[in-house]
Amino acid sequence: MIDVEKILIERGAILKGHFLLTSGLHSDTYFEKFRILEDPRLTERLISTVIDKLREFSPDVVVGPTIGGVAVAFEVARQLGVKAYYAERGESGGRVLRRGFKLKPEDRVLVVDDVLTTGKSLLETFEAIKPFGAKIVGAFVFVDRSENFNAGVPLVSLLRVKVKNYKPEECPLCRAGVPLVKPGSSKGTNL
Ligand SMILES: [Zn+2]
Image 1 (cartoon, helix red, strand yellow):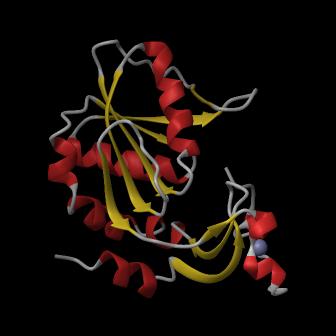
Image 2 (cartoon, rainbow, N blue to C red):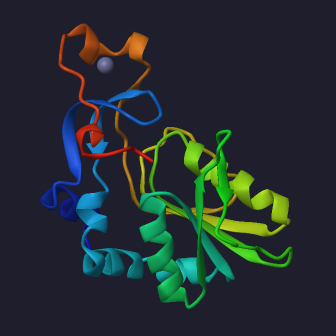
């Protein structure tokens, strides 16, 4: 059995401090998923530990939201021998399948992502799939840091962690004057 948390710490994928999350919440912990996804061999190895569980969903297509979800979807689909589609930001918010990606109503879809916090990216990806009438059979995330998110479908994760998320107006780290860090903001857009 591989120790996912230990690997994430060793790779610098778990950071401690005062962070502004994409969701708008503040947190004492941030997951820099690209410390894992930047290493395709490691990504392959981590996903291989749950691939039998994911195979039980018998998906025809794996769909992941940009940008981390693309790497996860690609590798999960590669190991399952099925197709990978990507859900991108829509022009009027939400997410859409572009690039000629088409689902059939009989398709079984596995939705994947890197880190689950509020569930927004997963739900937006579900919405992008709905117009095609395909069945969402399950979801997979690397790290589930959500509090009580119910995906409405079976959810598999590599690591489930309890971390503290705060609304900005209730954040004790703000009150203590700890500088707020927006991870990745200096290195490009946060998709
Ligand atoms: Zn704060």
